[in-house]
Structures are given as C-alpha cells and as structure tokens.
Length: 81
Image (cartoon, rainbow, N blue to C red; front, side):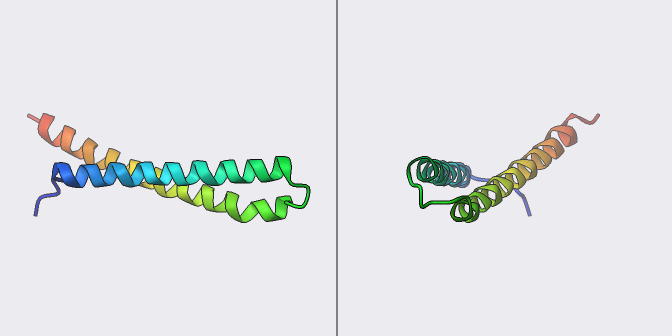
C-alpha cells in the first residue's frame, strides 16, 4: 500500500495545521489580554489555556517531524544507486 497523498489530502493536512496555529494564536491573545486588562484574571486562570497551547504546539511539532521522516525516507530511497 502506498503512502502517497493526493493533492486534496495535502490541502486538508495544511488547512488542519493552519487551524492549529490560528487556535493557538487566539488562545494566546485571549490569555495575554486578560492578564493585562483584568485584575481578577490570575495566573491560575491562565495556566489551563497556556497548557493547552503547549499541547497544541507539541502535536504540531510531532506532525512536522513525521512529515520530515517520511520525506527523508522518500528522498534517500530514491537517491540510492
């Protein structure tokens, strides 16, 4: 079974990545704004959102590494004599 992705699959993957980054950006802006403007919003309130952002970054990093490993295999498999 081949691992080749169709252009539609690649588009879906990239849109998913963009969604992760947009979600992280939104949460980070929310936390930053609330910490700066709301005296009732504390670090304890911010921690769950910050942990979620860290988790999302970790998921994205894993996805990028999987792509690098897959592409590395394709490049070096095809370049061997």
